[in-house]
Image: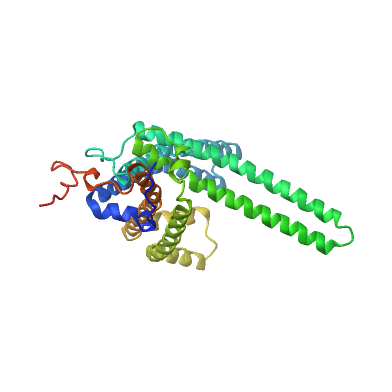
Length: 351
């Protein structure tokens, strides 16, 4: 166990420190994450859009009287089942992709060597991370049940105080409110404590190349409050930067959607539009390059912002894992070194 003190500045800005050490590595992982994420979204849409179009067509035909109610019901059910099946496959692909993303970033943040050429993998690191995330879910469910039971217990205790107060209803009400407040505060502090104590598990798992979960408890011994403070500051900064940049990107989305809004405004000025007219207008406007190109660029930038904020958040746990195992920040020679044949280019050398 390391007795090195927790440096809050390094904990907060560990992701950006690693970026400064190896910017090509960060950009290379981010590029592959955007490509894989975009490919999965495109694949899911390729399956969803035909079913969605069939669903809309059936509704339009039902409104026009082209099909009977029985035929329309069968067509709608078929389209819904296809949509659900496509969404299920999309969820599975999304989980696998998320594990590969998490593994790549954790290897980078904990100074493990990057995988050659393609940094994304579905290997032993990702399999162990799946176990860690499943245990997180199990602990979350247990905590949820515990919270419900605790609040019920406090509510019963407060209700008993209220009933025992007799004619003095004000004293009973104050007692009930006090018990519920203290109970809620105790439950909230317990949840925060457990979450921080287990926050290093993914980074330790990747750093050690072994399954780690409850070892995170030891990794936060003596540094609980610096770790908590780091997460709080990262959360505040993420909300500030995310809100500002998100607002700018939303303005861009609004500008791209202005032709769609104008078309619908013009359509609403006449007679009440039919369902067919509404969907025809929507399809024609969204197919314009001036609409979908800015939306695609804006979506990519928002996804890139999400990647940065996730790396910012994971950096606290990664720093703590490195500090715990190596007695502080790992030496520079442990940082990933890219060869001349790497697509991102060779790492800079000194001297």
